[in-house]
Image (tube, rainbow, N blue to C red):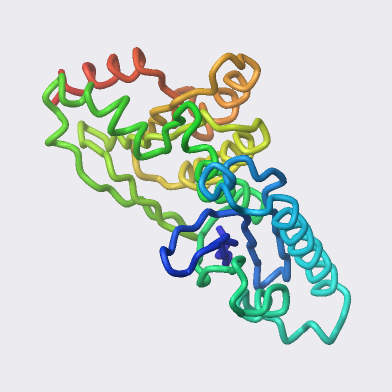
Length: 277
């Protein structure tokens, strides 16, 4: 697992009322000197929020910002004078100097993930795409998958109050599952949404979890991971891809170490666990 820095690009047309919309993202790997960035390419949602905004002018500024990100990304790899740019704060000041412009980068935050592309795809979906399309048909995020879809089955079978945090350590990292229950072994439940707007974002999220699960399965502790999934609608190919990657077996064992569950399967698992409590 690696630590990456990221900043959100925001559009704030009126600093008095403070309303903004997320319009881009930038992510940096300090060790590998890898910089990734992307902006939105349509202003439909921005216009819905701010009807008086000059859409073409905003798109021009966004494209210029994206071009600068791409240019700096190349220079970080090839030009010695850019060696001093070793953190995202320094990089964003070069790309978009702080002034009274309606476009600005937020403060730098960190994220841990298996690789830069997986981290970037997941963040862009959650922080930019979801932000832009919140008035369209609703897609649950991971927490909403728990609260709106799966929690009711744990409540129905009277085990929701028995759930607790459980942390599993590996040689290189540690992972905490918020919804876990001990029944001979630890059963760790992770709500996760694959009902995202684009197939490439879904695949990035799958690869991210594939990396986590393969790290976790090296632990000698007896436990099982259940992914409480919200699957993509009307895309059987993607559903098969998700299940084939994330139904993982332990080395030298035939039983699944992790399983992707739908609602019916999850309720059966909960019933079985309850019987042996």
